[in-house]
Each structure stands twice: as structure tokens, then as C-alpha cells.
Length: 136
Image (cartoon, rainbow, N blue to C red; front, side, top):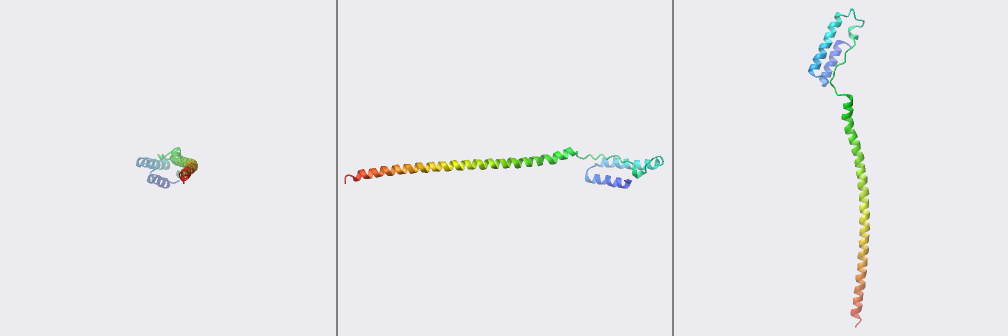
């Protein structure tokens, strides 16, 4: 990679926010110093200047495990919330069904009691009527 390409890549990293201004200036000076020292010592170097190994640039970026945590934790929470919501809905439906069955049973029992009470009153009225008309 040529010096111009290295400086361009360095500038792009700074523009992306991966490097601070201080880190950019430090790396730029390193590249420029290496180019002047490599041209002076290129006679003794086995590699041409553009093939010299490039030192990794300290980007100060976020480590991979942190990115995985930042992305993974909300995703995991979202998935777990979906499962929990489904469980809550299923529990709610079961409870609703039980309550509806119970209400239906109670309604049927109440209707039966009302029917029996009505029949009892009807028999009592019939007896009273028969007793009151027996003297005629």
C-alpha cells in the first residue's frame, strides 16, 4: 500500500470517528516518518517502501464482544419478551375459559334454583286458590 493510500485510509478512519484528531496526527506522523526513513534506508531494505509492513492503527473502536453484547442483549430481551407474552396470552385464555365455564355453571344452577322456586310458589298459590275456592 502506498503512502498516499495509507494517508487516505487514515483520513477515512478519522472521518468515520474511529480515530481522534490526536490519534490521526500521531499515525500520520508515523507514516510520514517511516516513508522518509525508508527512503534513506531503502538501499539496505529487502522490501521496497510500498511493501514495508504497516503497523496496525489503534482505532480506539469498540471491541467485538461489546458489539455482540450491545446487539445481542436487546435481541435476547425481545425474543424472551415475545415468549413471555405468548405464555401470558395462553394463561389468560385458559383463565378466561375457566371463568366462562364457571359463570355458565353458576348461571345454570341459578336458573335451576329459580325454576324450582317458581314451581314451589306455583304449587303454594294453587293450594291457596284451591283452599279459598273449596268453600264455594
